Amino acid sequence: MNLAAVQVTLIYAGVLGLMAVALANLVLYVRLRPTTEAHWRADATVRVQANFVENVPLALVLLLLLELAGTAHTVLHGLGVALVFCRFAHAWGMSRVAGANYPRLIGAQGTFLLLSIMSVALLWQGVSAL
Amino acid sequence: MEPGLVMQQAAQVASDTPTINWLMVLGLGCLWLGGQIVWVAPWPRQVRRLFGQTDVPTAKAGTPAAFGLFWIDQYGWIGLSLCGLGAGLVIAGVLS
Image (cartoon, rainbow over all chains, first blue to last red):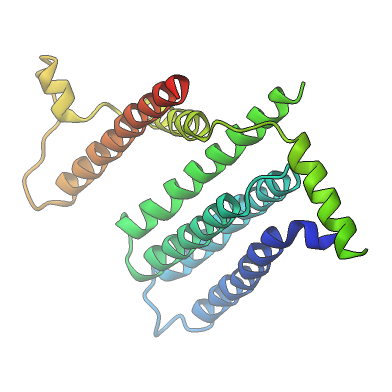
């Protein structure tokens, strides 16, 4: 495969891969400081990483397929930036405040919305090509 | 691979790719998520009162229970808003 043909996905896969490593280490950071970190943060950091692992690989696969299908780079960058923003908002919100908060809500629901939009776009392309 | 060949392949992919109606795609995506939120969350209490329901839960202002009710109401409104936005975008996509 010529990787230059999927250059947009490469960028966001790289950024989100680095973020995955950082979130995994954040879990360890909190676990190693049980006396100085707030008690709720241990579960919260694990949930941030779990939610990231549940959603981001699928989102990147959808982004890759959209790019392979010839979607405009402007659209792909818009989706990629929005995905990074949503994951950052979710991690930031859950790491700072216990319980419900707006960054967490925006991050989680924003990711679901992006997954829905990318999936519908792929369905559209697939059905149109029949 | 030579850059010229890459461009030729990219042009071939672009010419083979069906045109996407992004208004429709955005609208259907919003409807998909909004519909599920409406399915998951109870209707906002304001809407339930509007339709005459009297046994709407309440809580003393400033308590965690009140915050919980506010948050669930808000979630319901997000679902309804996404459904409305999605329907509007689909209609705009059909008309475009």
